[in-house]
Amino acid sequence: MKKTFYYKFIPTKAEEEIARSSNTPFQVTRELVEIRDLHAAPVIDPMNPWQIKRVVTNADIITGKIVLSHHEVFEYIFRYWTLEMCNHVLSGNKFYAVIWDISDEKSPVRYHNKNIYLEQGPQDTYALGWMDVARKASINPNDEVGIFWQSRTETFQFKVLRNGI
Image (cartoon, rainbow, N blue to C red; front, side, top):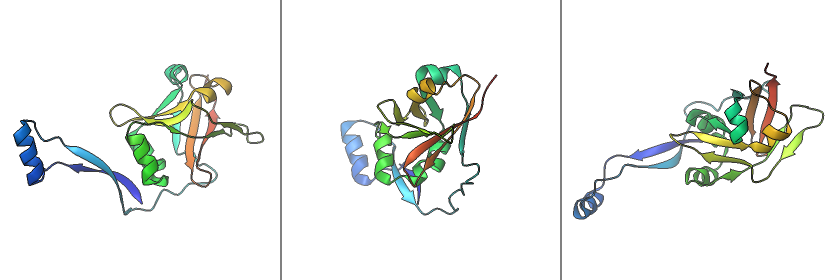
């Protein structure tokens, strides 16, 4: 099932009366709902599963956050989460997760603490907290990194795809 927002633009008669009696305008609201997906979920290529790719900036390293777009989060992360998990993030909470750094495939590194999370940002953006990964894995500006949510283990997978210059 795909997650999307349901916007309520038209008030019911009761909501209209309440707004009129309190002399306040009706507030448009939105709610996260699951819908049948008209298109199949994106097929993840096992040889190249990196659905979210970024060239790391200095700001990404300093803040310890990678900004993700609404599309990336809904298409490549929320699609695989339960409605409760998604609503947890959308209500302003951090979703603490595990990131596996598999840059060195022979010895992957697991990160799981208060610095590893997904949270809602401003203007329908989201932030993936990756402070420890950025610092301990010696990530540099202009490195290209890849991220994807692995449903089977319910963890983020991370890899340095290309070192910057």
